[in-house]
Image 1 (cartoon, rainbow, N blue to C red):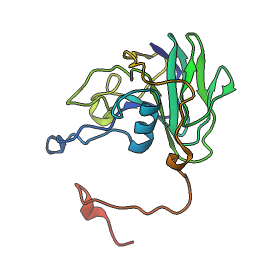
Image 2: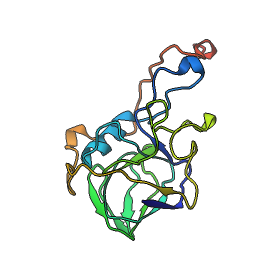
Image 3: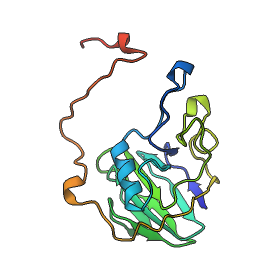
Image 4: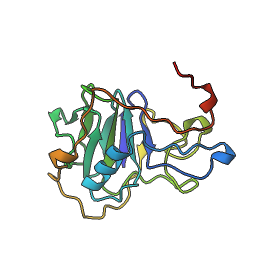
Length: 193
């Protein structure tokens, strides 16, 4: 179990999303940065699609009620365990009773916190992702708030502390970005400007 002491700006449970329900008005939801979510999950021995926390701009403050193996990938928001800096893109241990906090982001906007075993919320239409507008999925269909207690699944035992992404696979944040658009529901609202 993980207790939320502070929720951060917009922290939610996300996986790779739910496809196939747009015709019912339900978007895929899921992690905005699917690469970072998948990488964090794999570092702790989870399947790539396991539910993790998407931390936007201001990370949460979390008290671990059990020992856990975790990894943070994505935005450069340095994780701190009881005030000690941990490495991004690297699995590390958090002991029962310790508190995980985040530094302000130096680059990027969303970091992904994966926990060995995944965040164990119910599947809704095949996904654990939060769709807050529809109050669907995730933890009670919403972003996290103070006092929430997040269940953690059974760890596979495949992850190990110190496992890290090779430098060639780490994301380079910042610089010029090419934005690609796939025509969708509101495509007609885009202009050449």
